[in-house]
Length: 240
Figure 1 (cartoon, rainbow, N blue to C red):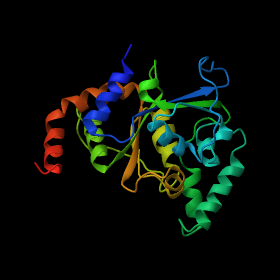
Figure 2 (cartoon, rainbow, N blue to C red; figure 1 turned 90 degrees about the horizontal axis):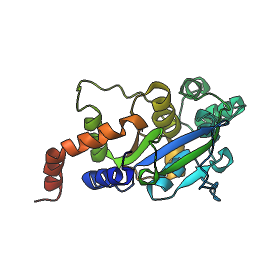
Figure 3 (spheres, rainbow, N blue to C red; figure 1 turned 45 degrees about the horizontal axis):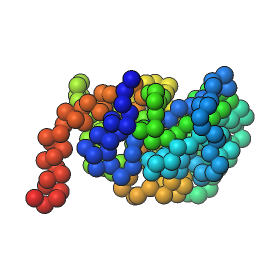
């Protein structure tokens, strides 16, 4: 069994992270929910908002009604009848001025990554140190420099160009760094969209990265492998 508390501490210390890495487990209708954890008695503005709260130490077991963004719950498979929510999202993104036309908005929203609709019943979103089993997805909230090291870690063994698909300014936290890693087994970053940033209130310089849980050990090991170059940049940044 992996020591997730130790791994999390190492990552936070090595990268000087403000937010602890977060694990996500999505439960389907046939899955047994954790016996020792009740549903959180609090509502969040969105899935992205919950990710940030978990990075600050909160352990959250959430139903779809507790995440205010219906686009996010649609992407994550909570909604059985999601078409109306997607249509509303298309009109909202166009109406607020993010796209020149409804067609451009629809091209972004409707062609994103979605989990199978209506199959998800709950989400466990918690600090990595809370987990006793490997989460399905690992989420980092980090600034540009920290994100650079995480991408180096992902590319440490093979090198080469990295494909980092983007939803085009929407559905960043739910589609690009959660659904996509689950569906395709790849890591990805998101610059987050307007709605993501308004609801989560992350720093303007922060981005998010999502990785399949199975890549956690690899990321951890390669961050430790890069202790020397990480220290070099920290030293220069400190003015020593």
